[in-house]
Length: 440
Image 1 (cartoon, one colour):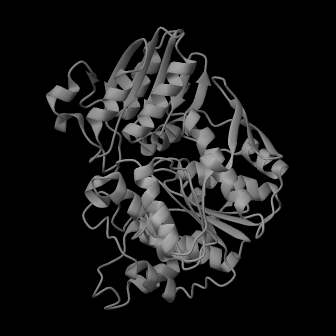
Image 2 (cartoon, rainbow, N blue to C red):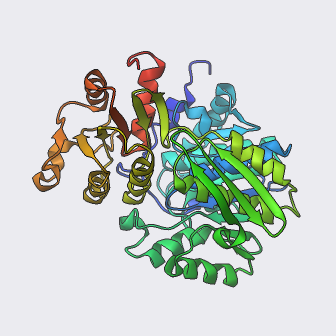
Image 3 (cartoon, rainbow, N blue to C red):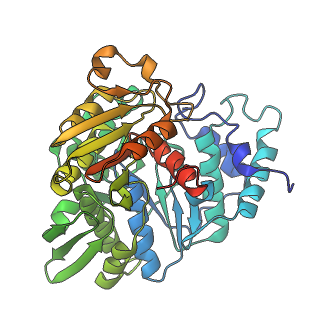
């Protein structure tokens, strides 16, 4: 079994965006968990869904509870630096040995004759989710924080039965081919994680999606807390490399110095703080625990400054809403630069025109270099309409790393470079930096 590579094994299953890569429903993951003797008894899940910010919110909750002295599990996707970071307990990635053992057990199940006759084989995300939940079942952390994949209602993570809290960060128009064409339809899919008796924390404040979430919480007998009503935001001070603010509620005050950049991360912090606060009867945390947790949280690949002078930023934004956050941050903090160069690579199915529109609206001189990453789901410039490519620099055969190298070679002292469009871009750049294929 020493030669068994669990990551390569998992990658044999269909990835999202490929044929058979998206199969909504819970039968396959449920069957895997039953075969792995998964036991939810004693597990306290916080389940996090949303169009944007769910990964950051998960990381913040993990950090808060670790500061408070709890044992904490965390499941997120995709990874940025190594696969094992998807599954963590007590701030440590699952070991390669533990991952190998789980993959081997899954392999024994998958090859059983007729096991998938009525459902089709599981997807990559389903088998990794089964591995994560089984790991938590065996490690028994005090709290486990789960990030949904796509949507919520039919997402593999929604196999859990009795979460203590369900968190919905926000709702935007994304993955409309799967989740629906309206905010209400997409909110209904996100709200599908709400289960009877769980406390519900919502970072969305617009009435159309919020109303759907409110109705679902009411139908499940769940207490609902809107984070922007729960805490007041005071004294927000944003700088290029961090931001400070205060959260207050009656005589309760939390002072935060957050290394994560962008105003949207402030609202993710409010959502995470609300969740930790309303769960205090079950898992007590002090205001100092929340403050220290937020001060120390790390979440790479989201407005991550990898070089300060001249600046290079990696940002995994992959929706027009994410590009809006990026545009607003740059306009507030980097207006003094003569030029901003975006290296943009996206996946198939993205609303590229709206994403480009946000980037074009950044103040000052802007160059957009359109290229493609190495993932199978990459959208290649040759497939993009000429009307969208008009006025952009296109690297048709110049893949992401080559485009990045070229921009670095030509960067001036008063130019900012930002790689964006997908978290997979961040993974690819980070890997190249880590093995010195590219040197900043």
